[in-house]
Length: 340
Ligand SMILES: [Zn+2]
Image (tube, rainbow, N blue to C red; front, side, top):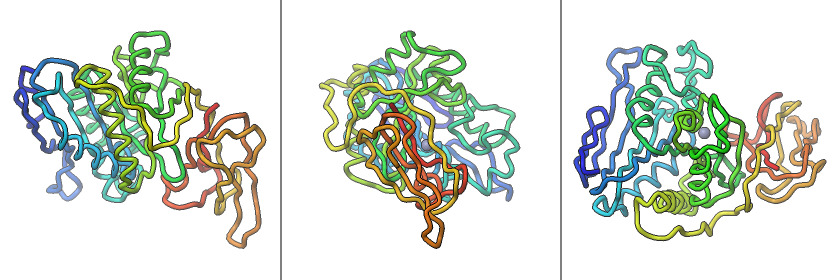
């Protein structure tokens, strides 16, 4: 942008890259700051402002931090039209424990979805600490951006996909912002999955405001994997090219499995019985209705439940490893995220 871009205390003049921390409050010792890291890449010429948001979930951000490091290394701001505002790790509290939310902190929140930044948009300036983090991000970055991209990751096993909430309070299907969201997802280049509108998500809140909002789910959430980082980097470059912020042509993804087309998500399968879980099908492979996708056994090895695919479709990921950290579930835990 020809103008200086200022986010909290971070100011990037035209053609400059600046990063820093924004303080939101303090922990219970009175001296430890709760902060949000922000990177501003301000292009030389005017163009769209893209919000790259990562780390709503503390265990999912290893790849996106590395992807942003590489993006900063290869992006020449003098060739960028518009600006990128990146938050590499929105929930530092959850990152400290490599967990989805900060368990020690969630106990203090006193609100629904305690500590889960993914389900608190657009935040609340007078609310809990996590609601205040979201409020800052919403009012200072998302509202001035033209596009928001929300970076997440599933665990192993899984395939990368773009997860598209079809709106927020209102269904966005048929609107220009929905068509633009689909176009950006196509440019990113991984499997495309749509799901019900949700106003509490960053993407849903953006769609309500008339701007595209796209959620990305890469894989290997707890690892720094070169193929995944490269695919994420290629996807973001493709989005910037699609938005005409960079010159070049959109490059197809080549290192990750892709199911062509646009697919509706089906309700996530949950476990009826607790125990250790064995996954029986490959993610991204077609699975006919009735096929056993996972088996649950107790600690003596006795099979307790065979979980079957409810309809023809695909498994995009088995969540236990990402959500909790190992291949075991309690009754009611998420077992398989699926699409038709
Ligand atoms: Zn997530």
